[in-house]
Length: 369
Figure 1: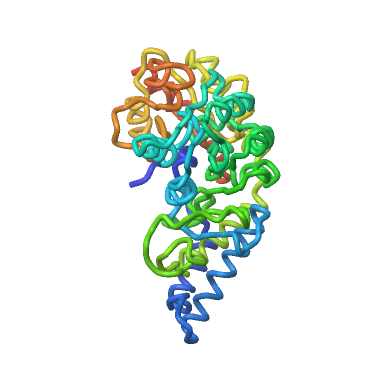
Figure 2: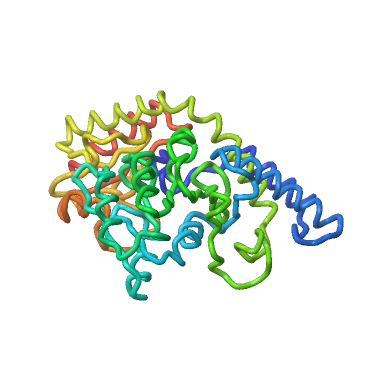
């Protein structure tokens, strides 16, 4: 049984019907190994390469610089695992912060940026962090274009300029931003990560996009697939779904204003009637996300109560599900108590005004209990 009202689009998105249809057809007609030289392989390879071109077009890159991965987590790991030094923050996804922890344990310099209450990093802090390194040459700065919990949008162009002036390279986790922000918002990055299932495509496939002179060292050992950067057979079925999602994402930006009005109505009503506190206040945010704290309430308990009423929301990153630990993102921004009572609501293109009305009614009942 699934929730009647799905408001957890930042965790994952319902796959497009068109993507499912294409994937079913490719599973029947192009199931071969894309690395094989015979006709079955060539047919599968055509599907994969067409998908690569669509993804490159989506982010403004060359298809040669698109590396298929199993998702955003692997893409971030591939981009960062060999960094001689890393600058990042506790706002990042676990696929970044845990790599940072591993690099530090291996004796490589890791500098954690200060986190303002707004959740929007100060570009000048990046410059200061790079100056603390013995040498910034080859170092990596990693920043998400838009935060996965709050939707706060970072000043990527300014951060990129200071990163490059310092002799470092910039990796941008664009998993939550692609399809929501114009590609110019992260055009100055040296590498980008994205995941198909955040774009109404299938799970299990993502991509790392890099500048021609910034190709990553392989993380896995194996064959020579993906120009030797990522061994393993690319699934043409998943790639086909990714292509449809990428093409859809190029046109979905036009839907954002209407979605923002729905988000604002939900947010304003909860701030007015439930004494909620907005996490990320004062910063530019993606228009489909709100993160609110409800004083005196446990966020995970509120999520469970809403689920019983048919409304799906979350209390943090889906990758931290099952953990009793409060959100590290909200903790870094505003402290532990605020984090413990935080709930994330994220809308999508199928969200309706009636969904918002019913969600508000469910919040009212859950908060009275």
